[in-house]
Image (cartoon, rainbow over the protein chains, first blue to last red):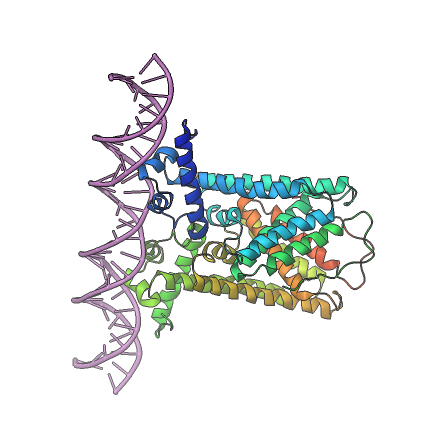
Length: 214
Length: 214
DNA sequence: TCCCGGTTGGACCAGACCGTCCAAACGGCT
DNA sequence: AGCCGTTTGGACGGTCTGGTCCAACCGGGA
């Protein structure tokens, strides 16, 4: 359970199970996904799941870790290279495009799990809280990079701005998945970026009216 | 099912069931709440539930409508009177205080349901989407009132600003419930209000640095 | 070749699940 | 009192649930 399978075959099986479980949990919810569902989807047998994960709780933990790694990998890759407003806007466009492609379905796997499990299980809440912390670090790194490049004022509160950006992501994704329309996410992220720009050391000529309609 | 019980006694029973179910669903999730759980919590018998709601799906519908009415009632009451920045900030403080009191637990009942059910059931997603639309109307009304009082520019895009505010609410609540700390909500709402103020017709002396740290 | 830990399949269990059913009790009528 | 639709209680059935158990299988090392 705690440790990874020693053989390559075992590791492959474990991965297959986690991926199948992650997919099922993402579009049914954790408590609506049965262990038997997972065995069918992963083409595995029940003893394999209990061998590698101990019980269903352990399986859900593995799913959370898997989704956190996916999302944060994606985010970290895009955010690591941000050194200008243009690059930050490319990051925004990538997220909006991803959501638009699936018409909002699913939203953020981590956010969805956090909404469902934070009140139910203290262990899982901790994992999800850690995931958000890591995400904040990635965003905060990008903001620091912007500040180092002279695009944000020295005295700007980067922690607060990071919270604002992550809130816009999560809130926008929730509204987009509920309305099946990427617009709320685009508008929320646009608003966050406009807000960031208001902390530029040389304030732009004048404020820009918000562009998109929600 | 579709219609309300004809007798006062029946209506009382129905209400008791919905309230108990809403409480259970809020802190266990819909699919983790069994009909038998509800019978026990509402001190009702099974036939009563199936008599008034048809099946579990109908019960969940009633729970959504109940939670939407609660949240929107609370919001509409606070937002209807907003005519100045001070009053908007009082609305923000009321929300933050409510969340702080329960250390973030639960978050927004509507948001939590939306995260869990939007991908699962198209009917329920529609109900939740409608709830968000009504919420948007309440926020939009407050913003219009601010504009009518000369606090927002005539050309400000109120629809977009409404989306930004609602995203901040939902995102902030999610982060607060996951971290068991009201700070993210306070910071997100502060950011949204600061953003709104940047659309004031007479821009304030200079931009204000964000106050709280996240 | 034998051995042995890791791996796999699936029957099986006890309890929980949703939903059905029917008979009894209730309560406002006339 | 007598009636009738509404409301109530709870036993029951068939299915699904998480979890256990054990026998078989595999593959590499000696």
